[in-house]
Image 1 (spheres, rainbow, N blue to C red):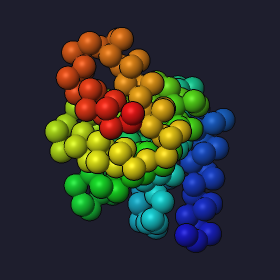
Image 2 (cartoon, rainbow, N blue to C red):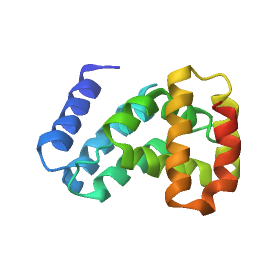
Image 3 (tube, rainbow, N blue to C red):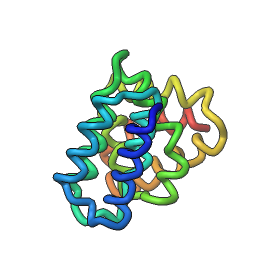
Image 4 (cartoon, rainbow, N blue to C red):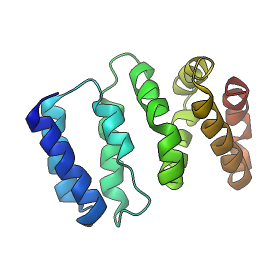
Length: 154
């Protein structure tokens, strides 16, 4: 990473935490970050999701940007998601649920999630398992999709 990347990441974090999470500001920051690149960009973006953000549009900008970085279908995105999931589960459970449902909803992404979960650390498995249970409570129609994920996280 470089100073420009780090500065833009700080600007983005400040905007989300104290600036109102304005969509135009988030979009501009994400554009700079995408141009700068970085191995941890997807994880950095996902880690900034906040249930306190005033506007969902800005948060979806982060999700879409993180998803767009994957070169091998879902491999790096799922890895980035799992790397931040326990913290996200605690700090922003609503967004943790949204992005997990997005991954679980697609066959290829769900299979990749199951594959990576099998060797994931215990805190990752536990947070995914608990979130799957919460998803099932609210949306029982997801049960057929959460069962393989829950088993992989066992």
